[in-house]
Length: 131
Image (cartoon, rainbow, N blue to C red; front, side, top):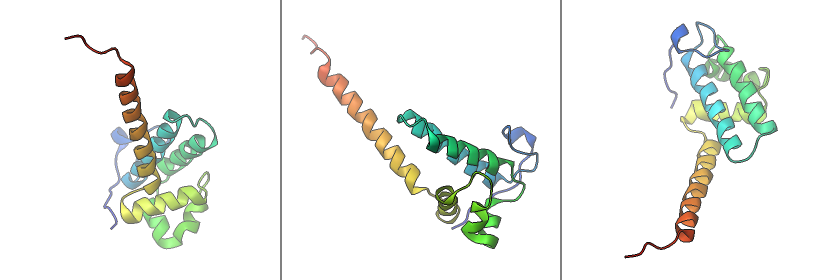
């Protein structure tokens, strides 16, 4: 399953994108940034979140679609890009081929469990309402 993406104009691009950035690249860059934000919100503010942001900037600036790079050169073609290592290349390949990213799904489940736990803890420590 490979999603169809088009090239977008200047109104839909970020700082590192060009006027002809393929939309799949913008989508992938957005997912990488979302992951970085989620990691930071979960207390990780170091190497991993910065690596995802740097890779997102590189992907957003490409004029060649990442799915084309993957199809023609495999993961090695993605790894050859600046700031894209093995882990990020595998994430991009997973998103291109399946439309999902299992690591992001896992991070969201952890985040949701923490939020639910915090709500239950706050309810348990709240004074009982008098009738």
